[in-house]
Image (cartoon, rainbow, N blue to C red; front, side, top):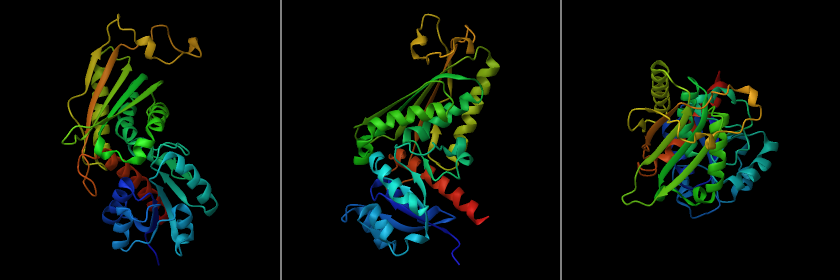
Length: 322
């Protein structure tokens, strides 16, 4: 009698290989059922075969053709936004659960520390982006205390940690992350920027979160700080290298600063009071150190994605066992 849920990973590159190692070494409710790629010479497929994992270099069609395909319940997609849409169409008739690690945004956005339990029944869930997984929890933490009129995130990752898939998805990264900042983080308007840092030696992932809020009194400001610190603890429970680089900074916005250019257009001017202009900027500076399961520690951008995806799969699998 099988007690663990079998999973397949489509994408034998950096993210897929790191995820495979996490499943095999850390997962409580999961076991590898297949590693799928399109390059027969990829390191990911070679490692999987050496570890006894069934492999195919014929893409999603090869996955469907595998003898034990019916035993696989969850499929991770670690390819590209464009490829994911094809994978959804191929796998939909087979009733597989898909966890999308690309910025395709086909299914609902999921950030484990914010809304893990909200979409566990969805046939496809989207893990947003590395920048989204790192920063949206902070936006959500602030929005739990006060409304966030505007949130901007800047994700800086080592150029060496950005593979072909990441580079091909830059536009999707900014669009998907900005959308999730609003839909999951709770900001009225969101913006995302990604920087590929070519520094040598490579630097760890750094993320900056700026939010504009109304927080005129010291008590509200302290509640914001505590909420952010609690959220950082929640994320670090499944991404141990996730941490604040310095204390949360809350600064007053001068009347002369034209923040109105950043705010969302009001479709209904009567929905907000006329004095709803943000009073303070909340600045949060983060660092994400990878677990170095497959890639060096500076690749925190990959680690946070695979760790988040693993969290979702583990919860789905645990629910099936109960």
